[in-house]
Structure formats: C-alpha cells, structure tokens
Image (cartoon, rainbow, N blue to C red; front, side, top):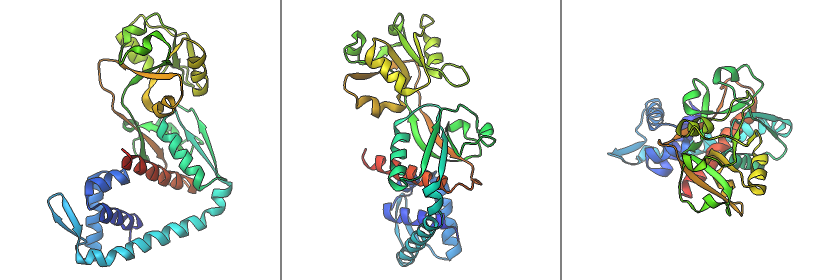
Length: 295
C-alpha cells in the first residue's frame, strides 16, 4: 500500500476539500483525486461522501482515519530513526541560480530540524539534463525547465523591481517605467556562465539606453552597493521579504509591459540515495503550508 496515499488521505480528511488539500500538498488536484480513488479501490470502500465540491468522511472513512494516521506516523518515525546518523553527518548540495525568500525560510525550517546537517548552496546555472550529471543533490529551476525531475514548488516570480535607498529621487514613485532608469547607475546579476540575468534582457528590450555600472554574483555585495551608493539594483521579486525588512531600502515595481508569473521548483532525482533530500522536500511543504495559512 502506498504510504503517500495514507498521508494524502489524512490531509483531505482534515481539510474536507480536494482543492485546499492539493494546494497544501503542492500537487495537482487531479493527481490527488486519482490517489484517493486508487486507495478507495484497493480498500474496497468509499472513504468520502461527495456532493459537488463538498466532501466529508464516510462511515468507513471515519473508521479508517486513525489507522491511516498511525501508518503515516510510524513510517515517518522509522524513516527518521534509520537515517538519523546520515542527518548528523550529511551534506546537501543545492544549486540556486537566484536567491528567494521562500528558499531562505525553507532552509531555516530545515536547520531547526537537523542542526548538525550541512546545506551548501551553489549559484549553479545548469539545465535539468546537466543536473543529473553534476554533484548537486537538488536544484532550483523554473517550472517549464524541470522536465522529468521530481520537484516541489518553492516560489513564484511576479515581476521585476528596482531596489534603492529610501532617499533616492526615484523612491517617491509607486511604479517605474523602464525609461525612468535611463542614466541611472544600475546593478544587474551576472551568472557563472558570464551571461547577464534575464531581468537585464527584459529591461533592455524596453529601453535600449540602459547600461550597468555594477555586476554582482553575490546578493550580499548587491545589498552593500545599494546601501552605500546611489545605485539601483534591478532584480526579480524573489527576495522581496528580506529586502523590505531592511531599513532604508525600498523596492519599486518596474513596468516591463507584460506580466510575469513564473513558478520556481526545488527539483531532485527520485533515485538519489541522500536521505536529506526527502527531509528538505518535507520542510518545503511544511514551510509553504504555513505561508498559505498566514495569507
């Protein structure tokens, strides 16, 4: 019997809504419905009474729920015990092309659970195909580049922002046109392969007069430049929570003429033997479920 099905069943039972349960599990509603249907077929009973979008546990479902919960709990406890020594000495290598606030929150959740484990982050810009031949355990990729890799959603890009000191003349604007940045000292990210970030390409496509004064491959260096000069960092909103927590820094959206709504995934090879991968996936789910509840 699929242990994931036991856990998924308990989540649906708790939320009494397939859509909400699927969001909290970060899987599609179709996949969740198929899993529950397969579990019901295997057990030979109907676990839920369905009426349109409303569902509730059936009599059989109420009987089965504590058993499913115990099965999921026992499996989790056993897995943790078996891999405890690996956690204490383990190393998890993650490729992160661009920093984002969700990833930092997930790392914090992971460190609380496994303080002795090491997480090493690399700014590798590689494809899903190249990832499987690398020494990385996991990698952050846009949704359309994940391919066949297992993955969990960790962040969404909504737009491009101009990050500047609060006393900068442009900081009084609620939104900026790309042309407003012409003549300014701009900071863009440069990747390990020597290419400028896509934020630069998008802005240049709207205003050919843009140029850069600084390039960075380290987020700390970018923030130091913003704090100590009149330069403006042009970047995605992935690290918005951290930026907005800094006194003296503002992040103003830039109108690039189109909407961005790209999802970023934490991807991994399902056949990897590193037990920390599955712990990081679980931490991702827990952290993002907390964020959904706090919206």
